[in-house]
Length: 404
Ligand code: 7TS
Picture: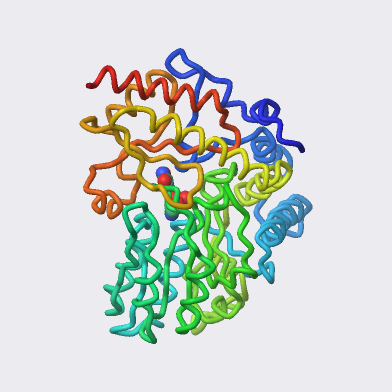
């Protein structure tokens, strides 16, 4: 597929609707992406034609559903270049994947071990580790960032020691758009024997990480940020960790044998997949990956970078407007206008059909760092257009005029 923006937009039924009498301009892609017809069709097809429970039936429908679900797992493995298909564990999403890993380390971490998180994490990649520290007596340390919203790598190097057991960093910050140097982060952590979890909730819609090349221990993401449905995601876990960590939940499908005296667990990935999974979600996640690859990540990145550059330039022409996150970044523009609350801007631009997110974006420590209550965040996807950037800029100007 060549990059034909109008044709791409026709794949997304929602993009032709109106909001408050204006054509929808959807710029809240960091919260969740919109879904192309191909993904919607895969959901309808599953429920219309082969809905059944998986891994347990000899009947035809169950086999068809199992094949489709497992082939989605295979597709995801290939997409991210994992070494083994069983290193891909289906989850309910990024938050679930992180909690699964945090729970797994409850009996591994000891008092006074250290775990490092970055200063720009989503609450999902802070709170589970604080809970883990409470359970184990380990200490949480923070890799600081500078004013442009970039991690200070010299400080990271200083924090690493033989006490460091785990490092958690997002690949891309949801509130700033910063792309973190995860190759270097992983390599340095491994030098002191620490494992690394990368939160890829924001990255996988923009770029295509290569798990083997990164040599990452854990990588989590959510399908709904990648044109797939909500309620499904993956946790990549290197085989050695998969064998080491205990199961997260007990139940059907995660066992080898159960008696009242003793239960033995299934191998990977089923050990971490108790209960009936989101079968349709997994299959539709596979369809979303096919869709993104048909467009191509190079084309996606190039178009999104053009949107980012244009939006940055145009927004900065507005007097008193400040952008947070000015380093190496993806197509997220977080901003405030002096003297105006972000919520008020968000409310006015919504009246003009433009969807942005306002607030702390579940990243309160970033807001504390900048001493602000929140920002207005416009997050662009490959299906957004330059005209939509213009609509945003005009709406923000209008909001400023009304609120000043
Ligand atoms: N980590 C990051 C970096 C995120 O951006 C998000 C969601 C999560 C974790 C949690 O993902 P979930 O799919 O489990 O909910 N971020 C946002 C956002 O920026 N606006 O709404 C949700």
